Length: 240
Image (tube, rainbow, N blue to C red; front, side, top):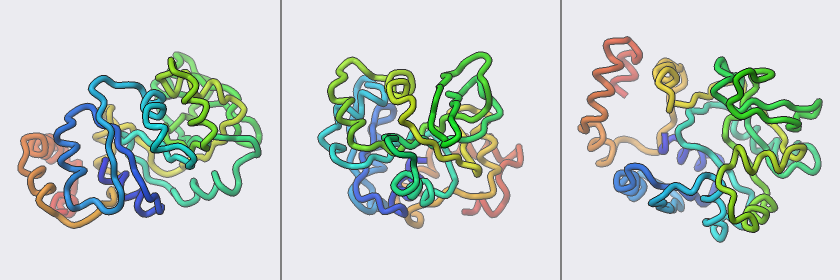
């Protein structure tokens, strides 16, 4: 998934990337250091997780004065990213400092559900509510204008983006709806469903030492033993 997001960023013309590292940090660093990656990829290690807002704040010097594409790498997302970018820069409503990607979910109780006005600007936000008023969900993929980072730098106690940053910008968050694929693969049923999606994740380069090492790992072999009997990959996908 990390490789997919890096490939997506490259295709969109992103010139610099910052990856937040915590879990399995050694393996992630090894991957990021491999020759497969093109462009400028940096990482910031967090021994203790700071929360998304906290990560943005402590890395403000890297992000400052730029429009920032913020993504959570455990999301498998396929959509018209170029249109998402174009909407933010050329078509979003006036005074909106954030563009949030949204999607339609079958499990609204597990998501942050948004309400919008006629222009697609967020008017209310319901984070994992037991009875949310709809199924249009926050995809946790954003474009942020520099003013958002400036405000975060002055908020030393804020750590959570969904519950502390987004409520502050109600009325100034535009939305762009992804009608294609969006899955949180941290949920097992979504991970299984992702294996059957017809659009494979894009990769940066052909197999290299890192990929061959990964395919010899216990994690990869356990995954293949799990999904092959269930018919979740076809022969062509397994060969690829």
